[in-house]
Length: 374
Ligand code: FE2
Image 1 (cartoon, helix red, strand yellow):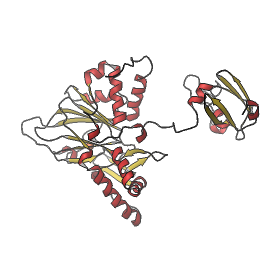
Image 2 (cartoon, protein in one colour):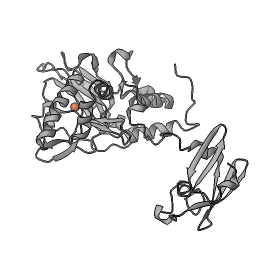
Image 3 (cartoon, helix red, strand yellow):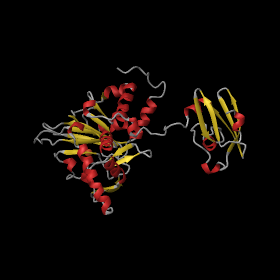
Image 4 (cartoon, protein in one colour):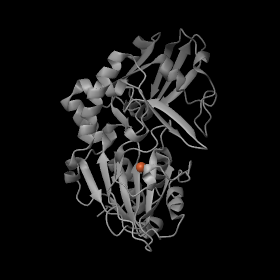
């Protein structure tokens, strides 16, 4: 199709290389890069979508080398695009992801991992490339184990502050919460009664128990994908049933009602919540409750499979950083020896988008040499 044929069209069609690209006129106009439409520094749009005429068409196309200049009717506005930009923004697939669904993750069983992603805190501080590798591990594998973090109280905040914004550093809840006993805790995600849930969790080991207190990690995305493959009906029920979670103490009252498996708008796995301790009574029509329980059991059974659990023993100075929207964590019971410091972990929450932002800035050209990582 020649440029002439397209004049008066509600779309632009052009060929770049061997690709045939097609863009709606409204989309082009909405993304017009001219100084009237977009702030040249921030790229933020000045106009609202309602400012674009509803009967917009393209009446002129001028192609010269890399440049494509469009004229629209009814208002004669002109937009200049580069062919390269248009090719990069081709509307021929799904590129709107934020990196948070199963599509951008490496799903694992412990058997797939060699030692699991690990890093050294002093090297992390000294080497931007090492920092990028470490942060990338959290996005890709869901966790990283940082060694040699000084065993001083409060260091966990320094680790969290190194990749973004620390929100919600939570004071330890009142004793009596199971987490602050020596009992075993089964795989769970933290704070399901919050919305959004804390997306990154850090656990810094200051001292260990003589016996027990080992940490377990389960890839909730891998388990959810397995549930979908084996029992699509149960998977579907868990993505559609909002489960109420709650936490109440003297200073706090938090409630959130969300499905146990959260999907992206395209139906890809994007988050899991699992914590029976804080689940509250379902209040749904009988038939929905009756359908929920077998699905819930099936899901719990999958998450509890020993072959899904990676077992780690945190040493003093280790700081585990993991994606709380994906990775379930557990611990074994441990001994309490009078007179010994005993098991002491400090934890805090941070944000996965803050971590991703820190990584993206680290990876900007020139910020560190992109050497082959050995
Ligand atoms: Fe926890």
